[in-house]
Length: 302
Image (cartoon, rainbow, N blue to C red; front, top):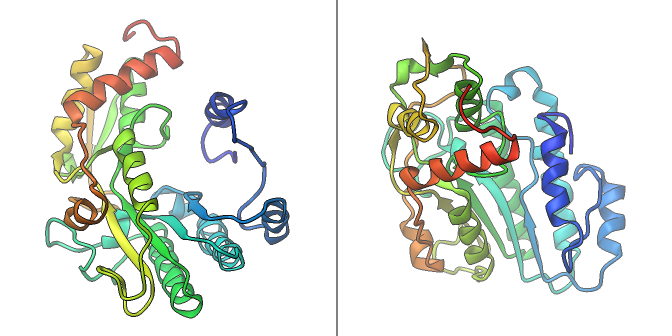
């Protein structure tokens, strides 16, 4: 609910959830040990935790590094401590990021690839979260699964992401900035496929020395992607087609901390929990644009 981007969108999301059976919202900071401790103490046995909260965004980490230290490092630690004290906890599932692959050039990215060259502080904090979880899993037998998400997009998404800002700027008649002169590829993952991956992983907690576990700890990491690398120019063309308008493009060099290409190897995810992304850009982008027009009450491109 912070002001990293428009809190009105966050409140609108919350409004769709409030009143649903079993849903409770706490306006609390995951890095606040006392607040999180009080929340956990209200419940009886907790059998699963899905920890997705973090400070996101590569470029924001260049100017606000301490936001990432608090949410992604301290916040991860607070959640791990809460998890290890939950008697009978069956599974701790947490969000990592494809950004951890950093400067790797081998494609597609596989979870066994080296991840020692983060290109941004954001990526470094997400890799640190994986290592922190590995230590807790080893020390306390915490069953844990990390999910490296690849460019998740769709309705109710983040306005700072390219697909969202491209749509907004094209509708409002502003030029869009295309980094690395458009020579970029991304593995775009539709939100429904992402959710299916989270729930699939949740239902398959790792066992000690289980397949794909790291060392002797019950901890695994999986990629959640669409298993295809889409050209950025084709992605923009899909947005233009859905809007019925051509974008004015400003070509720019590669942004600091960015990577040229992401591409997920999802073989392990498919094998262990049947992950099977079904929505491509040609279907997803029109669905997002339709949501955008409805939410922001836009009838047609200006």
